[in-house]
Amino acid sequence: MAETDPEIHPYSDQEARTSFTYIPLCESQIRLLDISLNHDEGLNFRSRTVERSEARGYFALSYLWGALGEAQHEITIDGRCLSIQHSLRIALEGLRAR
Image (cartoon, rainbow, N blue to C red; front, top):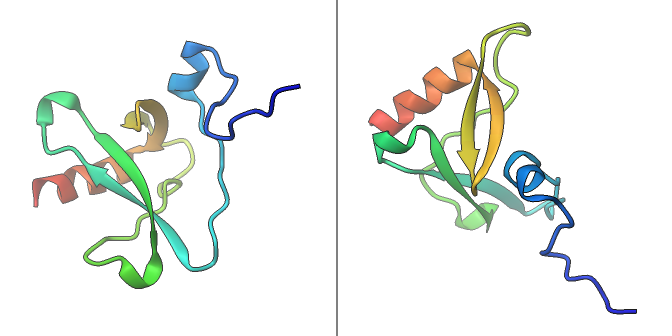
């Protein structure tokens, strides 16, 4: 039996665009999102994992930030859609505008 490549997930194309699999980090690591400055793309990000000691110039926001029941908005991270609360969307748009 062939060993499964941990980077390949057995999702359909639709699931791959809308699903996230949590990958644990080491205690010394954080996950950062690089935002696309192209306003035509909406809120589009690329994720990367870095050592906390090497991370410079970032803002920390929670993807769950906002009141329950707020309008949902979608952003794209590494080609996958993620629903976020309205207040987080406003904060991300403000950061992109800086």
